Image (cartoon, rainbow, N blue to C red):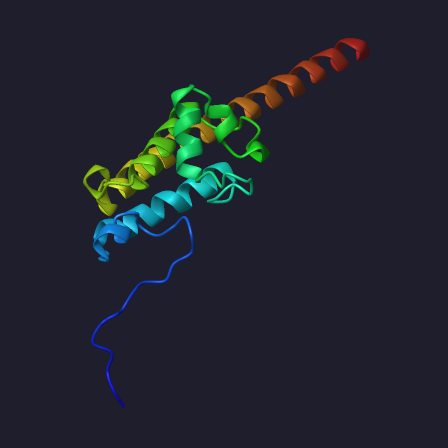
Length: 155
């Protein structure tokens, strides 16, 4: 039984592998950060990593173009239909872009990315809580109005 002392090359799904690997043939901690950034972009946009077009545009390239145009609503998965805090989504997209940077020097550490994403999640949870409280308040007010109206008819 022999042990493998090293790898000749890394195999990876196109679009995910750290671009610096193609230059150095080495992976590092920031290579994982790159992959997380690409997966985050897929989750946020609900688009494949490589567009199924003739040009095969990479998701990071497409998102950077959309961000440069200030078009956050077109970036986010259309099934969400605006039910999100715009600031937290902008922040999440910025984190994903930074993580997916082609230069490892521009990528945050994994713990920095997690901290920033936790902040996005906290903002979104606050928004949902406030939205739910407003809906509950509106429901109570509507029931009160309906009750008052019905009581007037009985009087």
